[in-house]
Image (cartoon, rainbow, N blue to C red; front, side, top):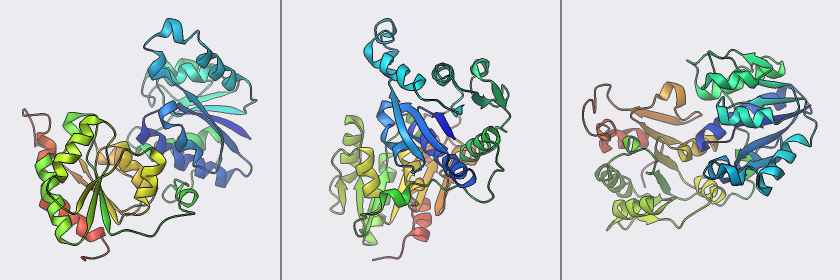
Length: 331
């Protein structure tokens, strides 16, 4: 059986889809997947052993000049890649108009969530098979259920398995007595105050651990520098791609993360973590996996105040108390 998956972004959403492939591969011997994904995340699906081909698209970039780019060679190549193979099914695991547009290019039975389950209802018009999936489930469980119902196998009992750690840890370097801070996120209301990060960094350093601070853009690099300033145990990392970040994750003792896709990458690699949440629900999108601790801001925190007030209500002392429970021991 040959199935095309449409899940193009974002990083966390892509990672949340991986356990569904592991379920299907364990339930349907011989099943193979291709995957359509935004170009910036193309390396992630290729890490899963059930994925044969990754088809990168650039809808985010093409939409800036649609009259030119949707007539250009990149789109033609992508469309030909979608139409050339013979698929037994295509599953839109995203449920947006943009993913429905891609799904519609494929000559195969089309599966997606029904109008009560999907994120954008008009996307349902494209699907031949509309599948109910409760919105109250965690994102990982929703996608697992979608695949099970689309492909006709019972949802496996127990937690989902991302299926990628063993693929990436074959040449794993020795563990380092380090903690990684994922401090950056695109939305201001999800940021944890720099003063809190510095306080936590000092507590981690006093326990004998080094702290690594990655970054993905100039703003994050500058924030990392301010958090690390004057603290010998802190290192601002060079700019890393996703595979290089995965390699770093496989070396650290633990992670502290705000609500960001990189935190979900850590969970997929089974790295112990404390994740900090303000406006988003841990029940629906919390880091999913073993050794994952969630700290949610107080319900009334930030009401009527600054965008970051909810996150500021989580103290460094609270985070340190939880982090100590998942670290192997003070140094």
